[in-house]
Length: 557
Image (cartoon, rainbow, N blue to C red; front, top):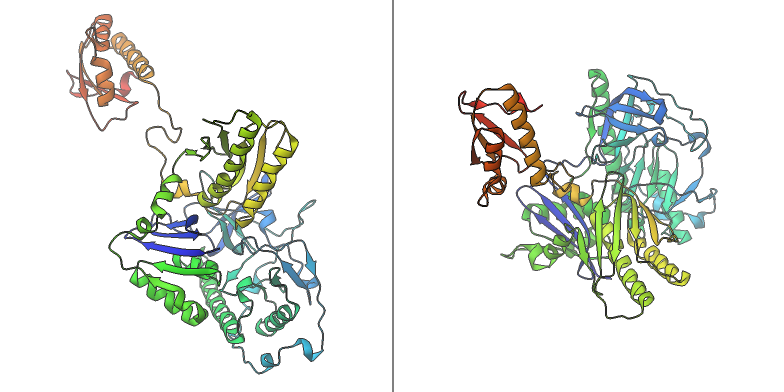
């Protein structure tokens, strides 16, 4: 499969598209007003403990406290992990979660298992690294049953953002600190050495494991990423050394924060373009195209120090037309804003987002197929492909309910289920798909880390406050009439000016016997209707001709 990374830089945003066989597969955007916080590390203090929800709130120096669930505090028993090698499967390596499947590899003194070159390499480790941060409590929890945790208000804590804020929910943090590099993820509070399950060759696993043991200071652990497969010792050692230097700098900032007794940011993760290159640009990427000379230079410099073999795959786009337009990405991006997406078979899918979940409805639409079951199966299979793609592309997280067209045969329901399971395997987020119910509903859960694409590129409508609907014209007319009743009952004025949106003004004054004329006759009052573009379509304002001031609120109730 041909995969490409396309980077577009504008004055106020950076957009990154990942394409597969020329089709948009993943999309990321970074805008100034929505600063990227995912991966940042903060020195904070516990501001409140809410045992009723098994969580604490942490002051990290921002306007809103971060949410720390008890399940997100460090649950590693560091005394029992010596000489253990965890085999981890990263559907999304940015999350660094260990799978339950572990394999213990005992140390073997046989030199055949050791790379002789390793013994000749000198790994530079900063002096006193680990002394500051080890003073933090290593919290321990159980996934079920009682929770053993040492948390109290005003206690200092080091946390990392693991989920961006979205909707009305604040950001989520964890005390399980990870520092990602290109080939390795440093675990400063754990002794575990984890190796990606995708690295299957035993000799290579042993080589990487032994290198990790030599490179890590006492008390530190790491996860060896899939990208390290086959890399030279010099490349791997350079990554470890950079991470240790970075961590030493973090410890120095923590010491400053402690002296100031002030919550603050101690580590900021890379910006969007750099983090995508670090986490996504591997040997399976055919090329990277960037339209910014500055970003191009930064990427080349980073690769020269970390992956010189990939430098030749980076191209600078110098065309006069926008790069996303030339490569057809803009057209596909336009579909991500649509509520209704058409299918080739004539059907469509309707995507509705709510606070708690996302609902997707599959409709058959027009079809020449006379057999209802065959039509339903064909439409559902096509819809499953598009839904899997849209979940990944729009980064829709949480609970997803898909209402497929009813199918009578169990084997057809299994076809749709198996296809959906197969399609979501390419998704980097953790995703679970459940079989269809008797009602034709499929339940899906997808890991939520960032705001979804819609939240990033749009704001809540000021007219409808996000509902998607506003009061009808007749409803607004009722509000105006109620106001007039209150006004006539409590005032002796007979002349007012009514300010409304142009569409409402047209509604009130159309026809021979206009609505405003009937109101004047009924309430014996002179009403002058004026259009005002600055007034919302569901609002109105009233000006007293005698007092020459706004009196709307005086007679609202």
